[in-house]
Structures are given as structure tokens and as C-alpha cells.
Amino acid sequence: MKLIARVHSMGLFGFAGLIANDNPSVDISGVYDRPRWGCFLLKAVDVYDLQSPYDFTLGLFYTTLKLGEKVTITPYAGFVLEQTHHFAGHGSDAMVVVNTTYKIDNHFSFEHTGRFSNVVVENDLFDWLNRFRIAYSGEHVDVMLTCWHNNNVFDNNRYTTVGFNAAYSRIRLSKQVTISTGITGLLMMNAPNFDAADKRNGLLLTIATTVD
Image (cartoon, rainbow, N blue to C red; front, side, top):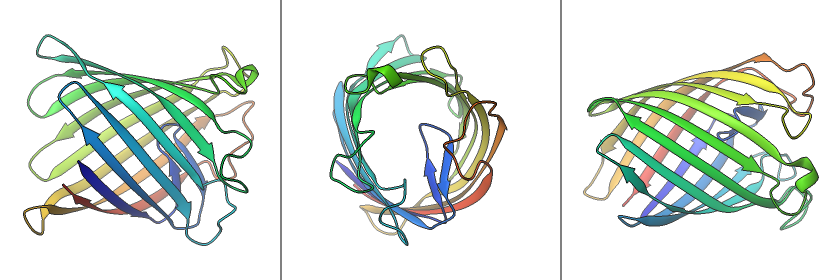
């Protein structure tokens, strides 16, 4: 069991590769992880504006499938509750995520994530996004290069975002508490028919505390 609290200098939709706005934001999450399955619950809120797009709850159940020593497939299923005005407002729906990780060596890995949203309630807006990520993880240093591609196979949203993240992580304050700090930069490369994001490019700072 892990509890994670993070403070960001602006709101970032991590699965989508989109910046919500310039306001500072906070999210608190809990992870219950077993060898074969687990669950994840996250609540995110805009510090200044409780009715901004960055006010939602995400809940996912997952299972872990290992294909040899290098490949891990993790399918997730759960929900997103848009809470801008109501507990489960317009845009709340089921979500499916499939994550595939290839472990290159002890420090480097390559990851593909397929995110499928608006699965049940608003399936006429069914959305498919691919996220590609190469990551380096050392004792205290994490570096990630990420590309999000939202295709318009099922809906009209189409964009490509690239991002860079560098963090100094796992700074142990006690036996159960660690802190991390990092910086993330995003650049939207193209969005010919995308108009939902007020801010497309940005640089944000994150400070996180983990209790396990």
C-alpha cells in the first residue's frame, strides 16, 4: 500500500499529455499493489479554481502479466469522474488502459500505453490515444522522454505532444517516507482539429511525498 501526495505548478493530464491551465494543482493517490493485481485511486484538484477542468477522480483496477523476464503487460479498467460542477458530471465515463513495458536492462525501459476513454456512457466520443515512453531509472535519478499521439480513428480529436521529465527521486526521510522533485516540459507538435486545451505548451515543477 502506498499513499502519494503531489503538488504541481500547473495542472497536467498525464494520460493525455495535455496541460489543463496555469494554476497550481494537487493530487492525492493510493495504490494497493499485489504480485498479480492491484488498484489505484487518484483525486486531483485545481488549487485556485475548484471549477476548472482539473478537478476529477480516477479509479483503476489492474492485473500484471509477465511474458518472460523483459516484457510486462498491465491491463487497467476503471472510471474517470469529471467533477468540475458535480460529483460525476458531463464527461464521466469508463476507461480502459493497456500498458506494455519492455525492460531493456537494469536502468532503461521502453513503454507503450494504449488509453481508451468514453467506453460506455458517451461511446459516440470513444477516444483512442497512444503514449510511447523511454525511461531511465537510477538510484535517485529518473529521466523520461514521452510522446502522446491522439489519433482520429474514432473521434475528431487529433494531436501529438512530446514531453521531457527529469526527477530527483526516492529521497528517504524515514523508513516509510520518501520525497521527490522533478520538472516536466510539454510541447504540442500539431493539433489541426483540437481546440479543447487552452494551453498547449508549458513547463511545470512537481514535488511529491510517498508513504509506504
